[in-house]
Length: 613
Ligand code: M6R
Image (cartoon, rainbow, N blue to C red):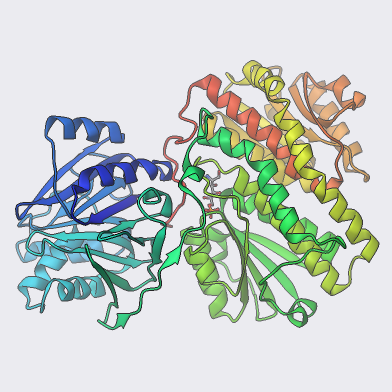
């Protein structure tokens, strides 16, 4: 979604803004722009398309000045176009605004302002903000800050804002409500950004703004106020990861780098959480044992990839911790009547911690008296601040839009949480716990093994990438793997892919199978009947001449005899095989995308974190 960067200090803002916007490219965007103050005038450059278009414009018509604001826009209201790009200004061109979020009542505000003579130029919801501020200044606001406050009290919806006034040239204003925004604290300068990576090369000291707060930033100082003017003491936090974490480190894409980081991420989660007795320890975990023992139900809410992680978590909790679990897409949960009560624990899963629907679900659940546990990758994100307990997946910044390492870290989080909850509830014996812990410890090496097969996987992708569609089938623990594998393929290769529970194939999708359709079958060996059932499904595909690509346990001759191509993975316990199997499918999607020539790190239309509904 949209990215915001802002700077106030004693040097030229433009290079800072451009560098910051480049570091936010992963969020997804279709146009970009900057505004700086120069000799009491606001100077703006903006255009549709990638940042290089803006850079070209800046070469032709250079800019220098400070403070400044920059923006990458992901269109919601109004098509991607030069005029709809941010920054937007008021009628006089003396107020410039960049915005992430949606102003829900913009139509009614726009009508009112137009009646008063304001001239609007774009189709965006954002443009009402500078006009509203202009209106409040004309209507007797005490000063610029008061005008911002008064304007924002009238806006409904979500916003993160950067605001400049030509007539208040020392100050950068920022505000947040429902969309992420941080303040970076430098030496004699301040920054704003949608996300930490944008400014990490400048400073690692940040203030996480809360909803309903306005920051007034000068080169030498930062003050924070609420919308009703109350001063808030800003808490400066140190960001833990280093700037190198957001470099490609020699890989051709961030996604490939992140796929390769998985063994390390998983290993360190295991090392941190499994003690020498094989028990899962969750330091700082703030859900009391008594509460866990009395848990009546768990409800897992999330979106996209994180939803698939939740589906996996459900199976683990039910099978090992014996808790009834439901999963729901956050966007659906909000609009049904899920009958949760204070005995229900809500688990919200989110890489970014900023997904609008997930946050809305959590707020609803809290209103109903439920406790919220979040599984999240981003410290300081809104979700973590609104949860009763947090399990940090600690995968490091994920820049590739398609989630990879955050997903396997979420799966690992569910494994560790399940072991913890199952032990407290007494549903697994000590020896079973130790055995599961030993099996968990083998996962990083197994993932490493799959990474070592990437040349084989590339060849397989090369054979199948050019068709219009593909089908992914899996059962039980690997049903979510099928959904996630198909999602990866869709996201980055733009090839239609459908994930299905293999048992459902006969109820419809079997009609699709012919000699052209690639059917990815996840059929790793298990100790229960699921394996036999998968073999039957593969035979059904074979009988209809589908092109079977199997993910199978190494040396499985049965599967090898049925499939056109086999991706071998090490022998794993049933419960943990999804963490390994999905890595094979991430690579399969990756190489299909590469063969199809897509922009793998920034797939079209997608945003890294979906901060609007
Ligand atoms: O940040 P979140 O985990 O809450 O994001 C949820 C989805 O938007 C996200 O998983 C999306 O599906 C990814 N692009 C998947 O690769």
